[in-house]
Amino acid sequence: MMTTTTPRRDNARVTPPAGGGKPQAPPRKRGLTLAERKKRRAGWLMVTPSVIHIGLWTAIPVLATFYLSFTDYNVFSAPNWIWFDNYIETLSDPVFLKSIWNTVVYTFWTVPVSMAVALVIAVALNQGLKLQKWYRTAFFIPQVTATVAIAMVWLWIFNPQYGLLNAFLELFGLPGQAWLVDPNWALPSVIVVGAWQGIGIKMLIYIAALQNVDESLYEAASVDGASPIRKFFAITVPMLKPATFFVLVISIIGAFQVFDQIYVLTDGGPANATTMMTYEVYRSAFQEFRMGMASAQSVVLFAFLLVMTLISRRATKEDD
Image 1: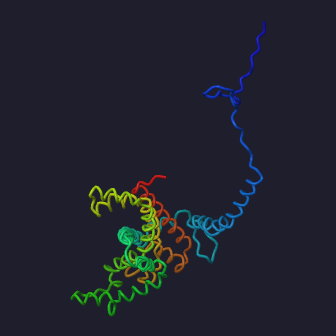
Image 2 (image 1 turned 180 degrees about the vertical axis):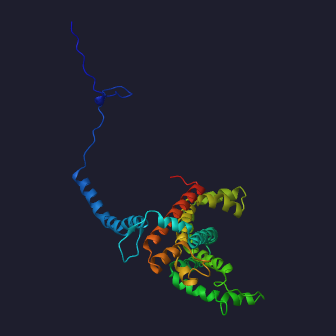
Image 3 (image 1 turned 30 degrees about the vertical axis):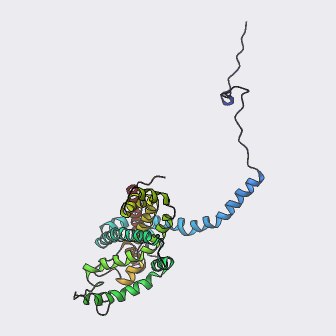
C-alpha cells in the first residue's frame, strides 16, 4: 500500500482567526494606482529643483573640499596630490592652534550667555507686558541687521579716544581701555558683540516655544504655593528642553563660523588674539591662495562642529 504525502507550502500558510470561522489568506500587496503614480511623479518634480540646488552648491563643493584638502592647489596650477601634508601642517601651525583656542573660548562664552539672556527676556515678554510687540522688534533688529553695520557701530563704541564706552567709564572715574587694540581686552570685546547680536533669534525661538507650554501647569504650581522662581526652574526650563537643544546647536554652529565681525573689528589681531578658525581659512584661501591648506582647515572646522554638536546632544540627553 502506497501512501502519498502532500508537500507543505510554508509560504502559503494560513492561520485560522482566533474566534474561529473560515481562515483568510494574508492580503496581497496592492500596486500603485494611476492617481498615486501621478502624485509620486508630481512630488519628485517639485523637489527636483531643491535636489539640484543642493547637489550643485552643497554636495559637490563638500566633496571638492575633501579632495583638495589632500592636494597642493593655488588656483593657478593643477592640484598636486600630497596626501596628509596639509593636515600635518595645519595641526602643527601655532597660529591655527591659537585660532582653535580663540574659537572655543568665543563659543564657550557667547553661547550660554546669549541663551540665558534670551530665555530671561523671552519669559519676561511672554507675561503680556505693554508694548510687547515693540520690545520684541527692538531685541530682534540686531539679528536682521548686517553684521558689518553692527561692527561699525561697535567700532565707535570701543574707540579708545572718543568711544561711548570709555566716556561712560569716565563718568565713574574709571580709566578707559584700548578695547580692540589691547590683546588682553580684544577677545572679551568681540565676545560681548557676539553675545549681544545673538540674543534676538534665540529670544524669538524661546517665545515661540513658550506659547506651547500648558498654562494649567503653572496654575497647579500656584495652587501648591510655588514661587515664580520655582515655576521657572521646575516647569519652564524642562518644558523648553527641545527648544533649548535646537538653540544650542545652531548657536554653536554660528559661533564656530564667526567671521564678519572679526574681519571688521580686529582683522584677527592684535597679535592673533582674536583670530578664529574661519578667519584662518579665509587668510589661507584668499590672501595666500593656498586652497589645499584652506580646504584642510575647513575639514578640521567641520570635525570640530560635528564633535561639538554630538557633545551638546549628549549633554541635553535628547532622544529621537
